[in-house]
Amino acid sequence: MSKLFKDATQAVIDITSHSSLMSGGFGLCGIPENSIDAISKLQIDNLTVISNNIGNSGRGLVTLLKKKMISHAICSYVGGNPDLEEQMLKKEVSVELVPQGTFSERIRAAGLGIRAFYTPTGHGTLIAEGKDVKNFDVPCILETALSADFAIIKAQKGDPYGNLWFKETARNFSPLMAMAAKTTIVEVEELVELGDIKAEDIHLPGIFVQRIYQGKAYKNDIEFLITEDS
Image (tube, rainbow, N blue to C red; front, top):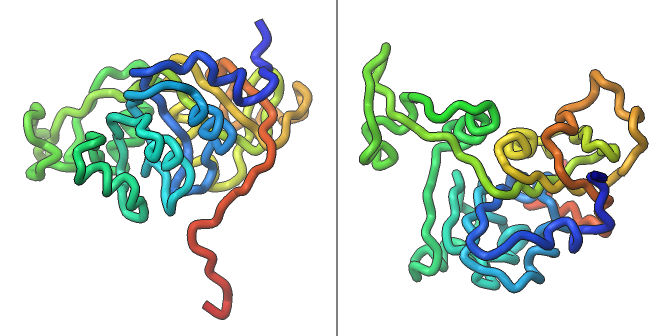
């Protein structure tokens, strides 16, 4: 069965209400713009979205927030996202804040089949409430793996098998999410032939990718533009 899809609309068509969805990106860097836009056109709601910051500066996953498609968010950072803040205060969306290192490790653990792990991060804080504590060299709390029904990610280059190459920090959480989700949907800025990405340059092997398509009309928004005169 081919992994190649015509466009974002076809690739996300079976995402339904109550699905859990991981979305790659850090702020607006490396976000799957086309997939987010396509999902925003679906008649669905009650999504659980797992992403570093659920959009920022009115862009990215904020598109889904504004359409009241997200009921639960698991993230590390809400600063710069007034839309999420507003819905949190109105109790329109529940938010689970996770320390960023723990966030990435929970996703990585799911991809590797590790069910849970202990970490000192968060011990003695609200994060630790209700969690098992064991004392190793320091007290540690039990954190469970974090998986999802779907992951939407973006890469700079990909081939028809799904082998991916990411550009610099745009890689962020995306490879981990691809490994942790049941179905990974990838959009690429450049769709290349099989073999065009050297084996030693592959950041994520195609075995973790189920769908891939050529993206288009990328904005690649910059959150904060800093110049020499700034």
